[in-house]
Length: 102
Image (cartoon, rainbow, N blue to C red; front, side):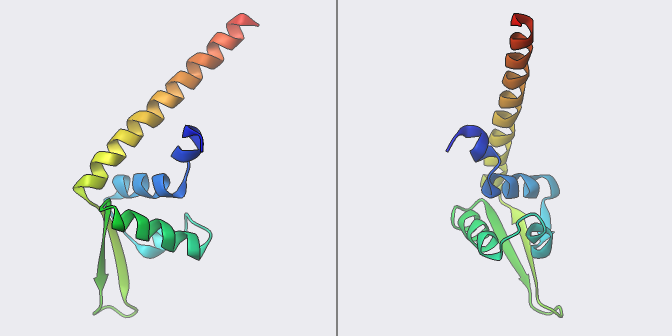
């Protein structure tokens, strides 16, 4: 998998989304991922890696699940944002150089 494809993966996008919002409900993440199976895999993987945390509100009807980013997840998300910025910056420079060479 190339770096661009990796940075656009549901794992990265979900982690970066949680980095922006800090805490959100399950349904707000589900809107971004079409497949329920994929959503489950993404959330479980991020939970197992300690990048996000889940909080279940059992007294609410219906039961609500909230997800938040952990300190470890925040560190990883910040590095991913740096990589995305570098990729965008390098892509812009490359395109500018191509146009000059035409």
